[in-house]
Length: 338
Image (cartoon, rainbow, N blue to C red; front, top):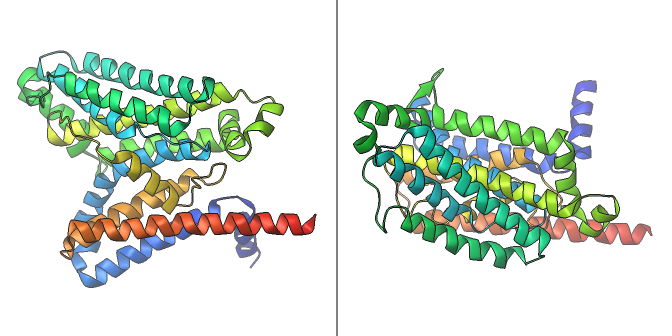
């Protein structure tokens, strides 16, 4: 009983933990419901495939989740994903070394993260407008990377053996029975989760999301902290681009379309508030799982893409509505106490 009471206290006292736990419970319920409809859903092969497909949503959920906690948004995520895939795949398909291709793509993606941080943190541009602009710019780079066409297969330049090795490392290969794509995403999730929960940078990110003026008075460097958040988002997008390039074996100019919204969905489904300052990246993990399970389960039972998007849209809207109502209720209680 004492252990249960400690767990309850922990859930109540850690802001966002309760919402994240609700997300995980919802994920489990979805799996069980779809499993009852079609037993194939719960087979190990499907669960492993689900986790592999979930990797991209987990990463964009982590990246966008960090931005949402600051009270901002990053609309450039999907375009940076495409830029990463196109730059790296173009160079590899033309015979450049894998390390050089990854380095150039990494620098390009981080440059956009830095630009977003400067525009929002330094020049105080509304994040919607600033990242809308960089969204178009990053997508244009993705188009121009290979002369406005998708790339050839990366094995064309690297050779079949090296090309297969790249694809296996980022998507098709397994380590300890689990697909590498999910393992890569999970490791990055753990690192960013540690940053957000155990470091000064994480505390500062929550501080500016809760009250930016109070954060300034407390000595928080808002510009630097905002830039760090956008750099984390850009890094996550960079890795998603590599995963997509590994999956397709080539670069696609339209890769990452709407991924910025997938990131928002994963975050808010897991209890990260779009109003800033509240939520745990643990929730983004649950949200990514809910999103992928819905996509996977609805596809297995034959639901159309329109129905899939409708269901997910209703869930996202409901999650945001609950957050707004909860905040208004909390604000009213504080005023009543005063």
